[in-house]
Length: 143
Image 1 (spheres, rainbow, N blue to C red):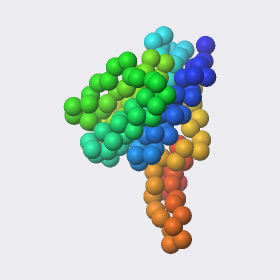
Image 2 (image 1 turned 135 degrees about the horizontal axis):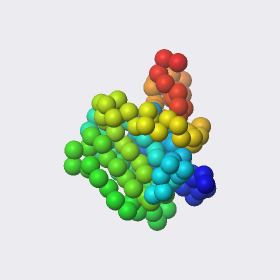
Image 3 (image 1 turned 180 degrees about the vertical axis):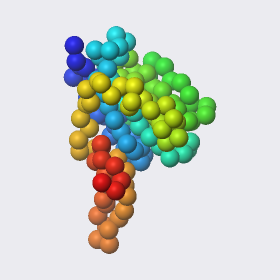
């Protein structure tokens, strides 16, 4: 059974919040067929510990506005890899070093990806006319 509509909506909302704090390389997997305990894994990168904390705080604030609290939060002291468990959605906010080391995408690559189209994940530059260019979810720098 694929991820529920509610889980996908929550995932997109969390992704938007993460992107607002310059979370990058957002990827969401439908893990409902492989795991009985959750529907979606959302993985987000941040370049330093402070940014990991900012992304986590933004996600929690946004979802709290929807009256949704995490069931569990782990890793907040070090801010290298913070896990937010919302039941149907588990959010992994990882420092880029941890992201490369643990390679969660490799573990879950056989699971269907959930589209995050249209979510800007990083502000790269501001043009002379003040417009902002960014990357859409799934795009990488230099491509």
